[in-house]
Image (cartoon, one colour):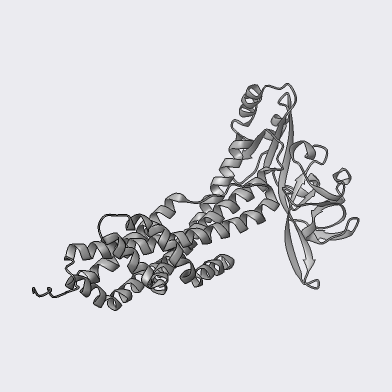
Length: 398
């Protein structure tokens, strides 16, 4: 967020440089109209690029923040989903419908389903003593059967091998900052001590931070069961058999695609809710700034509008001119915001592609359309109200 805000601020500071070419581009169709109104509107915006830039700046901030943050959150959620689902090789997952986990009888029934390989994973915790031996740091771990782990998951290993995973060994990610072959004393979830030898270092994209054998899960129940179909097994028959095995055990059977979609939707909903709260506060302030800027600009331009009345412009013509100029300035701000958004999302995409490969550039069009519409409405109202009180005297006849 700070990087995005700095980028938008940079485009805002350079707005006077970009305002003139952008205004000429947007005002081109207006100048080709038969009436003089189009010429007056474009000339008014081009006559003072600093004033136009100052009015467009709140629009730039409002639209740019909303588009970049919401779009960036959507891209980040997609990357996290890809990193979570990418290592999974299983065709089906059996997940608990509550918080208790999968009971032992269910695991036995799943293992008896013909034509499939079942691998269970139990979420647990390990604790390391750090901070000079004064602080326990919790580290998540997955208790798995090393013999079937590679069937269910693709685990990237940068050093060592998972073949050496036993009750007295552990596979850890590089974030643990442990070297291969090092012996380390850890505390398990029940508080008991255990000494492990590091036999494998996990690379980026690992589905878990560390792996241990089921002996260290203690009494915890499996949190997921990965089901891989053997060659020649019918997917429909296997799904029916899995559903039958899970019946009455507070568990559900989902395909890998459905599981990935559900996880992505939950992650997107949670992140978007938090962002909308933050954006609501920021957008409220920036829209207030937009209205204040237009009102102050209206007082400075009272003489100009009065002169238009003296030149024979009717009140309706004056209001149409003011409305068109406000819409043009907001359009300039939207174009500058699109530039800042493109730069921000392109930079984020180049970083995320290194983690999970190519990801789709996502722009939340519906919220953006609502924000832009609000900017247009506020700009028109803030510009038309002061102009409607502009008075001018008629030109005396010769």
